[in-house]
Image 1 (tube, one colour):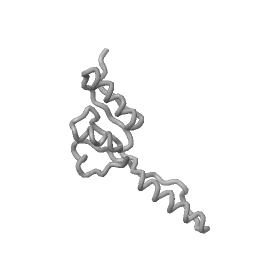
Image 2: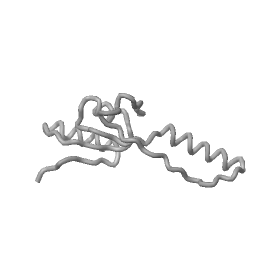
Image 3: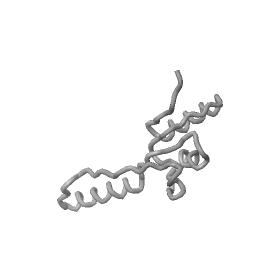
Image 4: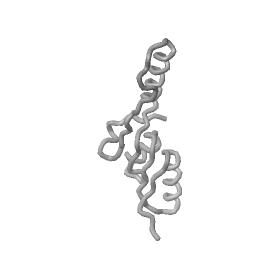
Amino acid sequence: ETVDGFFAANDQIAIGISGVLRGRKLSVPIVGVDGAKGAIDEIRAGGPIIATATQDPPALVRTAMDIGVALHSGAHVARRSRYLAPKLIDAHNVERYRPWG
């Protein structure tokens, strides 16, 4: 059997898979999650990590702090949780993305 690609639960795992594949001289596309610098560097270099879904840690912290400050000050918060939409970063938009880590 052949493997057509890998989906990694986070970019650190994707980077590990990439290293193993490179060591075996194999080229299989990898998609990770986090938008971390190491994955972004590989996307910019042409792979084997071809995409990552961002988690945007600064936006997560800002949103959590906004909710926490509002709750601490006694304000009513209609929804205590908020969904922050991830973005898929790939060769088409990697140059516009500023990685973290």
